[in-house]
Length: 190
Ligand code: HEC
Image 1 (tube, rainbow, N blue to C red):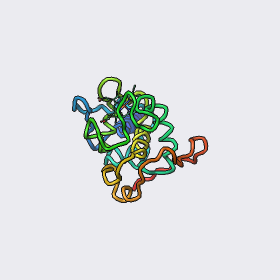
Image 2 (image 1 turned 120 degrees about the vertical axis):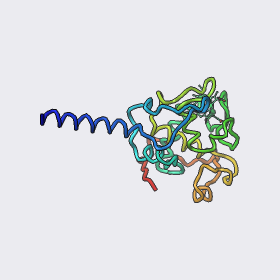
Image 3 (image 1 turned 60 degrees about the horizontal axis):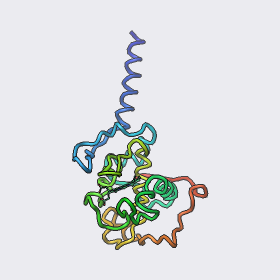
Image 4 (image 1 turned 45 degrees about the horizontal axis):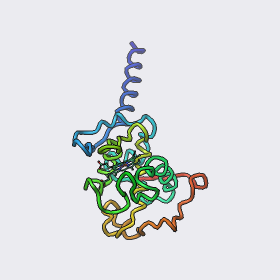
């Protein structure tokens, strides 16, 4: 009996861990169909970081303009996105991501941007849930936001304080150190 109870508790703990890792307060929907995205399809790693938990509850990306995390964010963008969207997100076979024009207006919000990356859009813009962890998606998003080149006043995805401090990205003067020379990415909520 005792044995069965403890096994049940262990199973419940395990299950709650799994549920927690994929649980979102918000409903995330496909950019193309509008159907809810199944976050349980996310890779097992990188699900329960502070950044992911915060994002799934609030749609706030705490990696935005976090200097300690930008080296990793840039590295991920360059390996996963630049081939189609251009080295500086200026556009190539996929559209530019460094201005305030969006094919899908919801990409002006971080929730929308996440939904497009997680679930994909048309054609070559395939879903990324099998290629990037949730945490890596948030990092890539922070780099997309960082390379924005236009008027900071239109950067509605930033907080007011971030918008005031934001300088349009200049690829000729990018102080982001390469990943191997960077310190750890330190993310804290709030
Ligand atoms: C194999 C090529 C390819 C790769 C790799 C790729 N994309 Fe795309 N992406 C596209 C194409 C093509 C479109 C246009 C699709 C459409 O209009 O539905 C697109 C559209 C988008 C959009 C919508 C833009 C808008 O104006 O609304 C976003 C955001 C985006 N991609 C982000 C990313 C990010 C971030 C990555 C890396 C994690 C990435 N993409 C990787 C080809 C790619």
